[in-house]
Image 1: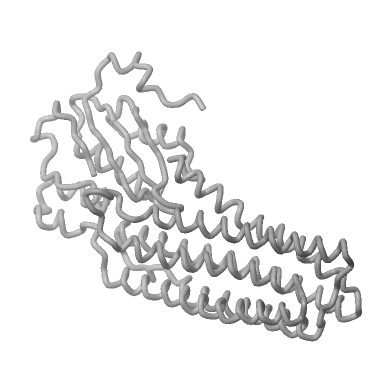
Image 2: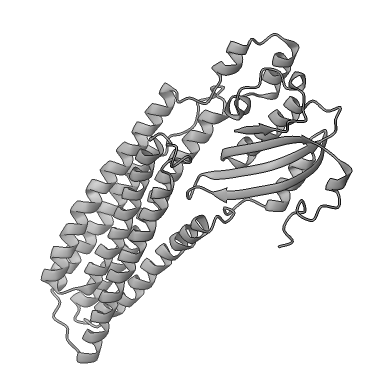
Length: 369
């Protein structure tokens, strides 16, 4: 979306349609357009609608997540039942960690589904924040389950209550290592293939693929953490097999900390999104500097950077330009910069003429910290 100050005459801004259409242009496209070689039809033809390649990448990501989720549910159920029969809290805690993986898969699939729903007049940004609310609920549930397991582990140590079937625990731990290895392989094979084979594609498509692959990469990181924990459970099972059973509740404490470490950063991201905070990895000062370096821009003000979801960034900004400067050219460069370098999902750029009173305006100054 692009707003243009009323003070700019229409002849300075030829063939304006939308920021999405503008963002799909390269600098060569723009030169052709202003030279008159591109028609209005071709200007719209590179608009950011999904292509067949996008649908194929969507299918690959969903397939990877669904297969991994199926494996996760089956083995998590086996660990809960087996952990109960073996009397092993370490196995049940590992199942709790699998629950974090399952929550991650569900949130990723849910966010991909909700992102495909159209915005409404009441929800003009669409349904993207549903992903954030889902993450919040899942983390609170996981913390509750982990707290209960820690309490039971403490009771076992206090009352010296150990009755563990090491053989069942050993079998489940070994299977756990294999299952997590398979899940990681599935995510790599079906969800990690997002390059373009040298094809020339516009930014809208490559950015869309990047956002989808974020879901798969996040799921892979969860599985990698659970693989490490499964190896730890296997080592603990070998120790318990030789009758040092106190290692089971000790492993429960250690694995509970691992679960918390896995989910704390998710909670931080959730709070940051709900507080309209700037996403990690974007330097506010750098964005102002790069926008200010665009030829013809006299001042950058009212820059706002926030997150719609964990991986969808929104930016709005006012660019004050010199009167002799071509507004359409500045608009194109600014939008392309924000989308190409910072992967901005929602972009609003307002172009206005520069006036001297902007220099002393306190409201136009960027935040000091």
